[in-house]
Structure formats: structure tokens, C-alpha cells
Amino acid sequence: MHSEFEFNRTMANGTIEQQLQDHGIHPTAARILVLQKLSELTHPVSMTELETELETMDKSTIFRTLNVLLEHHAIHSFEDGSGSVKYEICRCESTVCRVENRHIHFYCEECNRTFCIDDVKIPVVELPDGYEIESINYTVKGLCPECSGRKA
Amino acid sequence: MHSEFEFNRTMANGTIEQQLQDHGIHPTAARILVLQKLSELTHPVSMTELETELETMDKSTIFRTLNVLLEHHAIHSFEDGSGSVKYEICRCESTVCRVENRHIHFYCEECNRTFCIDDVKIPVVELPDGYEIESINYTVKGLCPECSGRKA
DNA sequence: TCCGTCACTGCAACCGGATTGCAAAGTGAC
DNA sequence: GTCACTTTGCAATCCGGTTGCAGTGACGGA
Image 1 (cartoon, chains in turn purple, yellow, green, orange):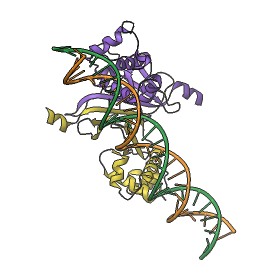
Image 2 (tube, chains in turn green, yellow, brown, blue):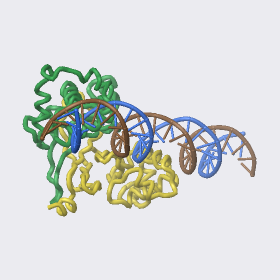
Image 3 (cartoon, chains in turn red, orange, green, brown):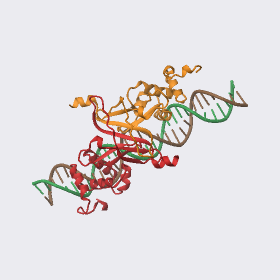
Image 4 (cartoon, each protein chain N blue to C red):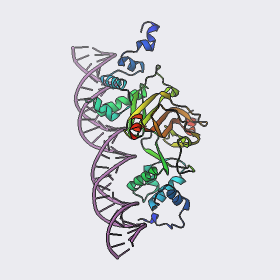
């Protein structure tokens, strides 16, 4: 275990550890650090970006950690069209996050950044009989305000 | 084209070659074959699946062909969460396909198939000022009728 | 008709994100 | 402490996507 991991548990952000336990996840150092980082960030990140942020942690550990967090619905993942999957913390109050509470995302084709449009929730459609909805990905592609302004 | 009557798309319809020309694409053998195949298929396919279908064609040719078709809006692409991009022919009447005319997709996490829900159009949301919409990906994940029935 | 140019295609190599096998390190129960 | 199980790091691998390059073909002009 590297130095970054050797933090004082009592000093650690208790709520992160609590969040993990609330989702039924055994709180290990790696899981706390990953969830901590995701809770700090205001935009969705790829595994590669997390690798950069958490320099001492191996990418396979990050990969498996993200999967554990996903399985227990502590985080969400989605594809924005950039080619790599993006992850973001689930900010739902309850441990189960309902589809209609999730917000949409915007991917800027110019600057390649992904934005959370927190104010806009995913419109939920009615599907033909038999389809069971687990999740919905609503991602808009285009130009972000910064880039559309620069082009105008 | 001698009379304005022949500009009527529904009448000019017919050949794949015509479709290519309508989109301003020089109709080569590869392009005809790819578009032909996409028009036959009733579900979106990945590049790899196309590679299997069109055994004699090199994947780089398929790749570049798909890009040409995409640029000229003869086909659409989207990510369903399977990890690979899916392609489908654009069945719009006009050469420009408006966002609100596009249908949603369903990805079954059990059988890994992707379905077009032709009857359900993408709900278009209002974005904050400055965002310019180019396209929208609305993909639902869950269980398809076949798989949800089998599980029930 | 021949020639030059440019678009198109196939092959092979490459890239990068995602994933896995395995061994070492850590953790909890006893 | 010991044992069983979980977690982590390292290295290798997989695979979809992408590119460089050379060969082929289509087309227009001399």
C-alpha cells in the first residue's frame, strides 16, 4: 500500500465511508479514494482521467473498484460518444436512484468535454409491452456555450 | 432528371445507387454494398458485424465507408452501451434528418441485442442558453420482451 | 489512345481503452 | 498467531477503432 493510502481513518471524510456502507460496500482504501474523488469532481470522468487523478492507484484496481461501485449503484456510468465510458457519483438521497431523477448530459464535439445538465431530467418514454427499463442514457451532442460562442 | 416530377424522392426511390447520389456520395462498389446491407438489416449493427456480413471487404474499407456515409447523413450511428458503435440506415424522406424525427433504441443487457423502437421518437429537451444541439442519443437499457418473459 | 492525377481499396501495423490471470499483500474470524 | 477470503498491483492480453502506405482503378486532358 502506498503513501497516499496511509491516511488516518478517523480524519477521513466520514460521509464517504458511510455512503459506501449505505450501499452495502465494504469500505476499502481504494474505494474510499475513488468515491472521494468522484464526489469532488463536478463533471463526469473517464477511467483514464481517474488514473491521472489517483496517480498511485493501478488502473486495474480503479477498473474493479468502479465496477463494485456500479454494481451497488453508488455511481453511474454512461457513454457520451467520446469513445470512453464516463463515471459520476450518484447524488440521489436514497440508495436506489430512479430513472426519472437522472439528469441529461451534453458532449461538446469541439472541446470534447462532457457536461452535466443537472437542471434537465431525462424524459422517460413509454415503451411497447414487455420491455423492462433498467436505465436510460440521454446524451446530447453539439457545441457547448463556450465553443458555440467562439464560432459565432 | 428532366422533369421536376422525377425529383420526387418517393418515386425516384429505388436503387441504393440513387440514394448515394442523393446524398452527394460517389457510388463505389464498397459504398453500394455497405448501404445495401444496412438497408436489408432491420436492426443496428456494429462494424464487426458488418465485417462478418461482408466477408470479402476489408475492415478499414468498411470503416472509411461508414464514415463517408455518416458525413453525408446517409446513415446514423450511436452507442448503445455494448462497447461498440452501432450503425443504421437513415430512413428519412429528406436528405436532412431532424433530431426530433429519430427514434429511440433499446439495448438488452441479457441477450446483448439492440432494438430500434421505431414508434417512439426521441423527446427533445430544452437546454440552457448557449448549447447547440447537433444530435441526441436516447438509449434505454434493460430487458427485451423475450428475455424479461424468460426471467419472469 | 496514352498519360497523369486523384479517389478508392486492401493489407498490416498500431493505438488506446477495457479486461483478465496471477501472485502478493491485506483483512477479519477464530 | 493461523487460516480463509478479499483486495490490490503488475503484466499481459483482448479488441474495436484508426492510420500509413502501396497497389488499383476511374476519369479527364493532351
